[in-house]
Image (spheres, rainbow, N blue to C red):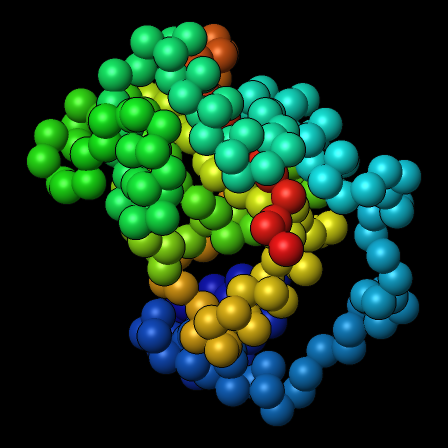
Length: 227
C-alpha cells in the first residue's frame, strides 16, 4: 500500500506523472489559478540612485579612475593624437591592433604601427577601439559586437585603449540601453558588454589577479566633439 506524503498536497494524477507532464500541469494550474502578488506595493518608477552632483563627464572620469582605469582628457582631436603617441612612447608599445578605419588613420598619423588582420591575435598586446557609450554613474564603457572592432578586441589584448568623445557620455545604464535601441532601430547587437576597469578575479585562493578575465590595463582618451 502506498503511503502519501502529507506535505505533498498536489493531486494524485500529477504526482504519478512524468517529470515533463508535471511541469506542464503545474504551469497550466498556475495559469488557471494565479497566486496573488505578495509585492503589489512595489514602486518601480522612482529613481533608484541619488542624482549626481557633478557633470556626467566629470563623474565618469572619477568613477573610471576609481575602478582602476587610466583616464586622459584631450582638448581636441589633434591633442588626442599627440597624447596617444606620448603614451605609446612612454610604455614602449611598438604597435597596436585596430580594425576601425578612422582610428587606424589616427594611429598612423601619430606614427604608430597598426595591425588590422586576424593573424597572430593571440599575441595581441595593445588594442585600440571605440565604444558605444560611457556610463557616468559607474565609470563603465559599453561596447558591442556591432562595432568594427567586433568581439575579440575587448577581451584578447593585455592593454585596451579606448577612444571616446564627450557626446558618448550618458548618466545611467538605462540611458545607454535606450540610446542603443534608437541607434540600431530596435535590433540590438547580439553582444552588449559593459566594461568597468581592468579584468580582475580573486577566484583562486582569494588572491586578486589583474588581467585574468580581459585586459590588464584600460586607457580611455576622451575629447570634446568637433563642432
